[in-house]
Length: 444
Image (cartoon, rainbow, N blue to C red; front, top):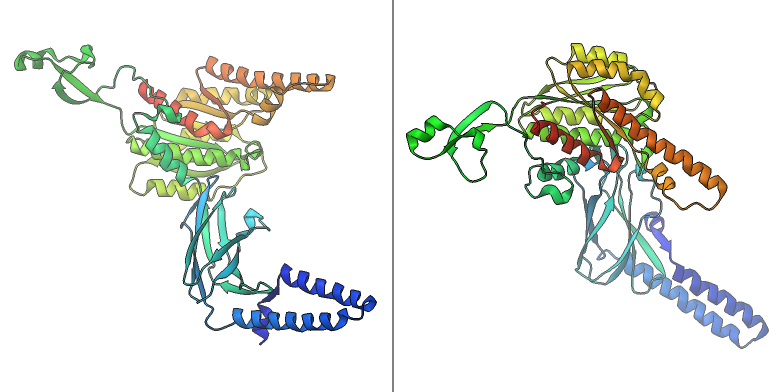
């Protein structure tokens, strides 16, 4: 009995009905003839409530439901959650479903209302976009069931507790892999890079076809076969590609819910996957005031899983980045000339000038690509229409800030350092394009 009352809830219709009866009783004080009518209606209403309770808490009322969620959720992406509801009773029901979402989403008003016929099934879908890496705990599924009377509702709780980790975006990794290797991927943002020359790694001699580089014609083989033959070369392989992530306080700035470090983490996973698909070796290094994770460049079978696990566990640090330490790490830990993709952020020319000598020394040892971010909010403000003198002043400062960002890119390129200035949401596309460009030019 206690369990029944524990799962019994009163609906809005119940309060409207008995609120109206209360008003009817008040009115009967002035009109005596209404009092017996009010009593009769009260008895009928109580009877309806009891009937409604008996209908809902009947043993024949049974509803089954289950939640289908991926084993791993992707950071910053829209992940679809499915819930299947099966009405195994003989009556039509109105259901309000409340799923106990992980606390990280801070959703207090999540509910789905729907009607379910007798012996009917329903498949529901909703979307979640996690903005933090870590463990997410889904709780029970709560079903608030009403009969056709609708005066009370019964709560049915289904055990569906599950812990799901949120990893760096595997969805983006797979999408960009397809785009990077698709010949028509230019419409998706990945540029088709024209190859400048070729490597010296010989692959085979093949028949000449229109469009082949005539400089690759093998005249000796052509004379033997009495037809034009060309040497075919393949891309350089087994080059070392290191993603270096600055996890100091400058990378904690949020854009569209994700921090700059999370954008860098997602892109590092994408680049590592593409590099491995291109037969290069991918590595990882993180730093702030001290060196964090270091994964030596390799292309073993489970190497991408090692990188994914390391990126999952990375945390920002409220410290300044130590670039001197990064330089020493690049000398000791990274053997041989490698492509270093450095994800960081400079908010002023002064901040970049302080570390420029170190960046130049690193670039002498390796091919360094410095990747930092545009402030999209300042850019939006700089493009707004101004109305007051104060707006003109503030917009001038914003435009000066944006111009300084462009000057920083030019300064880096002046010293022979590759640089990318990108919006956070376009980081993966621009970084992939730079990697493909450097590879096509034979610089790595």
